[in-house]
Image (cartoon, rainbow, N blue to C red; front, side, top):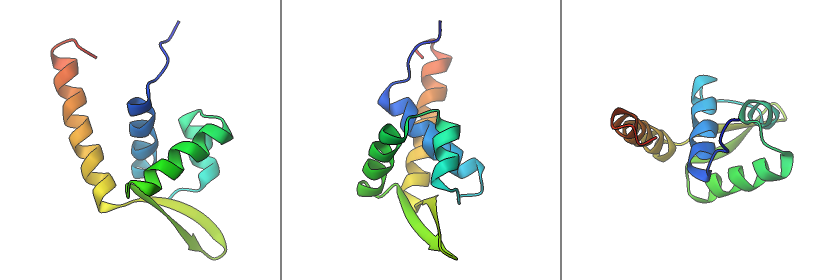
Length: 91
């Protein structure tokens, strides 16, 4: 049975998903890609917005999320930490 993801892992999953999709993704695609309930997704995205890691943009009447420069830097540093912990078998 797979272990549950912690908050840090979920945040990384959301940010990585946005980045993989060309830094522009609809909220419903985050919902499906992150495997979260609608309520939990709203909570996480709201927190990421408050922390300045993502921002919502509106184009042609549709909402999209994109990673800010601060969010991209956070994701880059978090990946380094994950690589380090994996290298030492601490993941």
